[in-house]
Image (cartoon, rainbow, N blue to C red; front, side, top):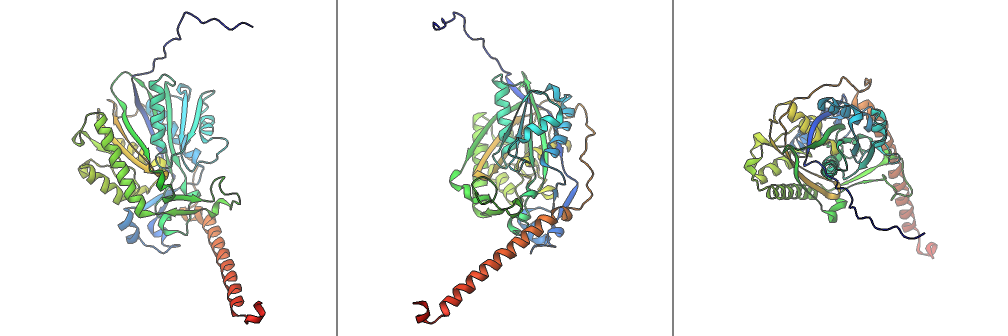
Length: 399
């Protein structure tokens, strides 16, 4: 066949929206509460030790899957935006603790919502996943690749937690949040962001026995964590402050132009350090770490939902959202809020009733980890004894 002849006509221009506005928001918090006093029943800690180092008093533990929480948050966000699932053309699911790798978690949320035939994808940059997903959604709307996007940040770290490790067991909680992002010609939404990663420090925060790198995989109840708190603190503060200054410089704004700072709720020390280094007054910094701990990708999005609910976000407000996560990823997002701070509607969707306490939910995992630790110790003791016996033998027996 002869090659096709070039057409005289050009491809049609694809025009996206000028801005990507947040029109709906919703959160889902599982009802089971794990308090500092609860933690003290099985690890060497107490309320004073945890509170003085983290600012945390309690966190939530899910009795359902990560996508179940995401589904409820999504329904609430859709109601707040006055939309239905049929109005969506893309779902982005940000998480590092999703139910499954294959199939995607986004596809399960899509199925639960009944959103037929639209695009959906998972995104994992650890604690920054929800905000990185917001960047992708905003860019796709502005380029015309999407019109209305459901952005989700959902996590269930309790399912991967090493409950025998005090350094991490006290820090994390479960939860989910969702945002509806859609095109607008009004100056609102994500105005600028700065993203980055200190990859040279990726081993500072790592979960082992979770992924295909572990060919002799243990059950996921035996995951272990590497957590270099000092390195994470320094790099987290540095990354969030740098990204925030980058964003403000892009927009020719100063710190005084920030109405509300909603930082990643990793712990109170990091929150305080970021606020002070940026020069943001404490009364402009939204904090809910005491109630929920660090919910990874859901953290900032849930904090944003609560800031709106508590009247901390006014019409036209300038909001700065800095965060960091394993990798070590970091970001800061600058949002100009629209004129509406009240939801257009409400959803009565709820999680199934929880019949267990938080301690009862985590008990099987904790027991498996204890048995594994005992087995490892017994194996180590046996090896040591064999070596000691060998060392004690006469020289002629070793010849």
